[in-house]
Structures are given as C-alpha cells and as structure tokens.
Length: 314
Ligand code: SF4
Image (cartoon, rainbow, N blue to C red; front, side, top):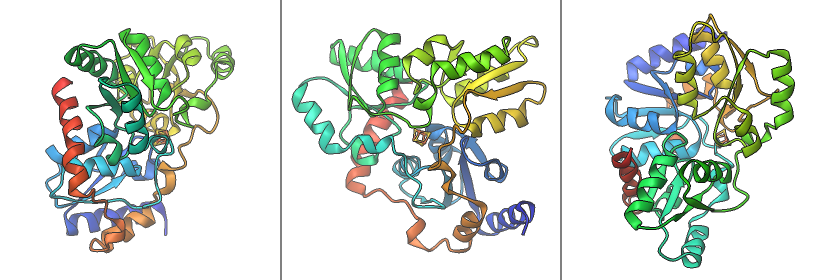
C-alpha cells in the first residue's frame, strides 16, 4: 500500500471515530500531512485543550509531550502511536535528582523545561519552553527574590537562559543535553556557510554556546519557523540548526526560500518511531490501553501547577 493510500484510510478512520491527530514539527512529513494540528510540544498540548473537541487525541511526538497533553486534558484519551518513543534528554533528570538539588540549594526556585517527565514537573515550581525560558526565569527569580534558580534538564538551554537573563541557572544535571542539537559544532556551520555565504544561520537554544554565538538567530522551532515566515524578500537562504523535520516543513511551506541543514542526519530517531501503519492501528484499536498515556492523578494534579504558572507568566 502506498503512503497516499494509507493516508486516505487514516483520514477516513479519523473522521469516522472522531479523533484529532496532533503532530510535532519533527515528525516525518507523511505524518505531518495527515495531522489536524502541527506545532511544538507545548503549543500542541494547548491545542489539545483549546481546539481539539474530540475525546480521543493521537499525539505523534515523544512521551513527555503526550504526558503534558494528558496533564492539561485529564478528561481526554491521549494515545501515542509508538509507546517506545521517549526523549533521552528528559531521562537526564529524575524526581530524586531534583530533590537532591533542592536539598543542596534550599530556597531556590526549580524551573523545568517542558521536555521533562510528569514526575519531574510535579517537583518543580514552574515549567518553561525553549521560547519563554528567559522570561520565566526572570519572573520566578523576582517572585522568590533570588538571583539564581535551579534549571533542568537541558544544560545548553540553562546556559542560554543564564546568558540572556543574567540570572544564574544551576544545571540539573551538568551533563543534560539533546543528542540531536548538541551534535552541531561550529565547524559544521563554518563549512556550510562557506558554500552559502548569504544564508542566515538559525539555531535552537539546545545547541552548544559556540554554535549559538555564530548564529544570526537563536529560537525554538516555532520561533525559527516564524523568523522564516517574516523574512524579507532579500533573505532567500537559511542554514537550519535543528531536527530535519522542521526543514522539510519549511521547504514545503516557503517554496521561494532555500534551506540547508546545519549538519547531515540531524534526526531525532525517537521522534521517528511513529509511522502511518501504527497510527492506523491505533485508530482501529482505540480501546487498547497499551497506547494510552495517562498520568496518575496524584502526579498530574501536582504537575499541572508549574505548567499553569508558566502560562500565567507567559
Ligand atoms: S529532539 Fe532532542 S529534546 Fe527533542 S525529543 Fe529528540 S532528544 Fe528529546
């Protein structure tokens, strides 16, 4: 069966069963094409609450994203096509580790990236995304009347946030990183820019500091997308430092621009564990609990507070 035929069957099953499909920008393009909504992790969870009027939602992303959608939408069934799709970066931080940091630095607020498990969120004071981390750290440090915070699990985002805000971000843990973004090195950018000297360099804040410092723009996936959307007529070429799924999306949406991936094979293999066959299977087996992500209410009720606080601060 071709992708096209599978996509048509999925769209029909989705309509018959009244299911909404959400897909992250890093999903394969054939999944992006059948999604009702595309976006980054938090945007999709909010969409699940505000726009998805179906009881069942299929979330094509990694597990922490589906967990966040479940925390925000406790009355909905959040299904994940491949339950082995997890984020290795989120695995750097456990609730036990957060408690150790709290003991070591009493009185400091705990800021956790939405790319973290529900149990870690439940131990935090406020969540943040890669687009609002600076603002969140500024606001929470003011509320606690401190000049430093605990920040995890991504050490590069912590470093970026500290640079931009001037507020010390203790990294929980020092080695937390995303294997996709942290593999981009300055030599990759220098090499590709020598081939396309007029191209603007856009990178994600999960990249290492040296890479961020030679970029023209640092921002989340949505911010990079909007930077291209709002670019001038003269800006025709972009070197993109994030997962290749965003490049595929932008190449489809902005046909008059040219995109070059900062480095070969910038692939989040964990995100790519979903496929059309699995989505079709879930649509045909909505009562199969193996594919449902449900955060225990004891954790969800604590984890929702830092998420709501972030939304108030944003
Ligand atoms: S791209 Fe990085 S942060 Fe995002 S899901 Fe993959 S490993 Fe996690």
